[in-house]
Amino acid sequence: MEIYKDLSNPGVKEFESLLNSQLSKTKIEEGKLITGTVTKITNKFVFLFIEGLKSEPILDINELKSLNLTDEIKLGSKLEVLLEKKEDKDGAVVVSLSKAQKLKGWHVLEKAYEANEPIMGKITSKCKGGVIVEHIESGSLMFCPGSQISDKPIKDISHLLNQPQKFSLIKLDKIRGNACVSRKQIISSNKRIDKAKIIDSYKVGQIIKDAVVKGYSSFGCFFDVNNGELDVLVHLQEISYSRVGHPDEIFNLGEKHDLLVISVDKEKQQVGCSIKQLSPDPFNHIDNYELNKKYKAKVVKITDYGCFCELEPGLTSLLHSSELSWTKKNISAKKLFKIGDEIECVITEIDKEKRRIAISHRLTQENPFQKLEANFPVGSDIEGKISNINEYAIYLKLKDIEIEAFLHANDLSYVGNPEEELKKYKKGETLKVKILEIKKEDQKVRVGLKQMMKDPIEWFKDKKVNDVITVKVSSADNRGLLVKPEGSEMEFLIRKSQIAINSADARPSRFVGGERIDAAISDLDISKRKVNLSIKLLEELQNKEAVNKFSSPLSGKNLPFSSLSDKLEKNKKKK
Image 1 (cartoon, helix red, strand yellow):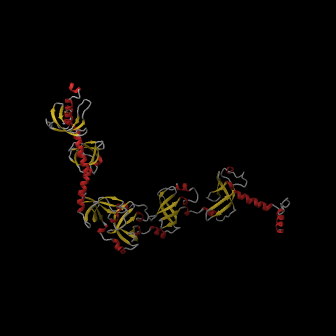
Image 2: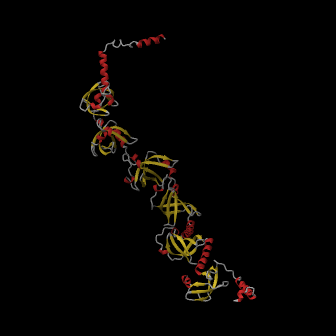
């Protein structure tokens, strides 16, 4: 013990120099991988000798069991471990074999990530948002998101579990120790390589047989070639020589068509095709067609707004639903035609610049509105059956003609409330009406029922303004008096202001209904069917008549100012 107390002793100095020289031979740093030799194996521990350390590191035997290395470890075996601490609080060296394995695996991942090389791994289990992948070489665990498992949605991944396969490293976080991989990138990369070979096999001018319509877009139609070997696009402008608004106007899903290869882009791995270029441009001989002439056309597609008809291969035109029938409004082409039908149509427009043809089917039939005008001109009487009634009109199906006529509620009767008059009629009734108006361009016919009756306004044809008539009060309210002239079916309203000259007497409440009174005609226009009655006017006429009949010509001359106006007139003349 004395040798340690006396530090100036030559022996102590010699021991110190020997110790320092031995430790300086091997540079040992915490957090680095070091290699040790197995010197002793017990049931619980494995002892290592590492040159440069003050004591032997000890490994727990369970750590080796977790790494399946117990059978491989023997006396003298070399193990690479991670030096965590040169000396803990108890003076022992702390090392880890599992962390060393993980660190070695991380170095392998780093090299693969930097070189952009795939790694081999296997999916071991599912987790939230994806799966856990084990790196086969190092045993490191990595995460693969669900979206990166495949290039197509997969519901069941049981066939992929524990199968060695390639993965691409897409993210590496050394600080957190996280690695993210993708199986999808490997699949897509392989497909790109395969697709490049497929693209090389297509040449401009080649004809692809029986391509299947796969889908639509606003700019073209997609076709499936050779049962999924390749998807190609036929641009909207390459579908037809005729104007096409959307591919679904021409094609149906699942249809087969031949395609002409017009472009091959190896960089973008795209093949462009055309359908219209497989046939000659029909507009080159469009002069063979004439306006307003009948032609046969083949129905090739039916839509909600009409159908597309082919005059000849490649020359297609829209037959709009408004041009299907003269009388049936908003009719569906599905009720009249089916695909493949040959129908007659009339060409109504040829626009060479816009490459557009307009056709009509109804023009091949007789215009029922012309027939109606010829056989039943305006003013004629005709029968019709009520086909529909709404809140303001009746619709009549005219006899022997496929036309619905419009009968407004105001034309039902000269007298009575129009809404009440509508309630008197039911669907299916037959009415005899008069034709009031025929609009061939708008395809409308207006008829009237009251025009078949005598107009009660004619009762006033021998009357004039200021004539006095006797009326019977039907009712009274705040507006005035509702009266009916004797001998007439019409009712008129004498307004409150027209009941009497004296405002105190102009009270509708004075009348209870049923009274017979006289009134004067204040306004009369038979052509406009306008009649106004007034009791006040009658009183004014009676007063005027009384003044004219009973007053003296000199009455009023003795009043103080009776000569004032004459004097004022004389003064003006003097000036």
